[in-house]
Length: 313
Image (cartoon, rainbow, N blue to C red):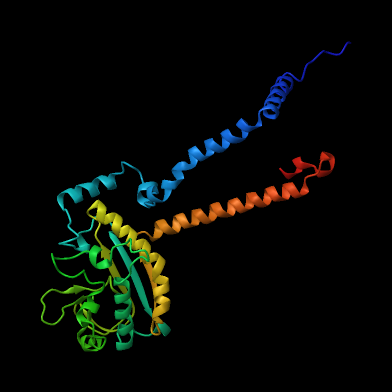
């Protein structure tokens, strides 16, 4: 029986002719093939110049449903219970987590922060945070951006106990005998303070009422709320928070804190951590691809039977 006359190069033959013709054109006119890809890449990549100003690190906007019922309910609350963080700020009225920076101070060696030495360092840390400015002066100061509880007044307190001592570290020793938790009524005022967001690691004394005396506290939290109701203020606050994240580690080191150690957090921390992890992953992937290509070039030989390039796959 005669073998069948089969053609198995029906794809290879026209493809080979096309590539041969393309190679002839490249050899005859090399400059268009060199310059056009470079110009096209430069034109398409010009938009990366605006990447830093247009990037969106909003975790909620990126990873939550656009028409979710929770967002609709929040818009209803914002429409019927508007806020004014420049004149009538109240953390309890926030419909979002707000724009803020936070420092968590913990006593070294498991001691208490309700001491004169610890409050001296806390007051110094508070002043350093309020004085943060970007090196180029682009970011506004905290005093210009901070949330205020009443028009013309100072910024809202980072911690009510810091306000009560009025800049005197020894004032905490005068407050401690009457300090109660979770509610504390300061002298000469009728408005009780709700302390659970600000104090932690408590050692409470005996008591039958809703408020028990505080003997010691191992942790204390400082909140620095910024204005975000207006779009311009929101952008300025985001710039200040970026400065805070960049410079606060150096500030903590320069203060030489002996009795406390502090950790930081902002409403942008999750987003910054997420995109930082993505950037590190992309960098590692690029290094891996570069190492793979370098290994391929180093192992390449003109004799394919020796170099066996398809073995890399």
